[in-house]
Amino acid sequence: MHAANKRVAILVDTNFEQAEFTGPLEALKTAGVQVTVVSTAHNPLQGLHHIEKGDRFTADQSLEAADPTEFDALVLPGGAINADALRVQEKARDWVRDFLHEGKLVAAICHAPWLLASANVLEGRKLTSYFTIQDDLRNAGGEWIDEPVVIDDNLITSRQPDDIPAFNEAILAFLEKEAA
Image 1 (tube, one colour):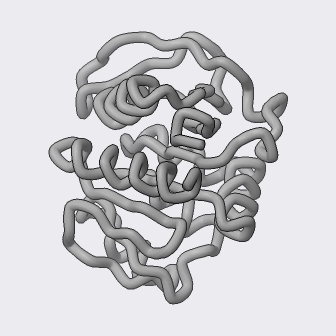
Image 2: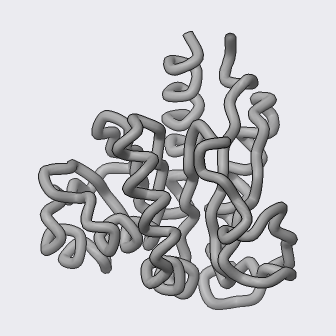
């Protein structure tokens, strides 16, 4: 069994950081992983290059219709607008809690760890994020570390678009290990 046998959900709202969406999406698909884009927003979804509009994308499933038990991992792209919208969605918080509790991978980059704080899953966890939300993560009980990638058991976090190659590598390594 390989990572190619894994099923990964990429969860977004809209107005996400495009590179943090397309980078993991392309890396996972290249590795043969079955990827489903799940969204709380209606199609089309808007990517951003920081604050400038990027491309438009289409979700494969709505969060309401998607079944988290069908997935082996959850990837959370950043972007402040996207992350702020996701963190107030009870079903998104439930997904994060369920994935972490079940030992499934949750990989979050940039502002996406805001959802982890709102899901109340950071107590005693080590993580990183975009530097501007470190106080929020510490206040939620996390130990914030300024590193390109922080791996704490089944939680992988990363800081920003420059860290995407290392973020992708950590995700794929986790999935390969789980598949072995």
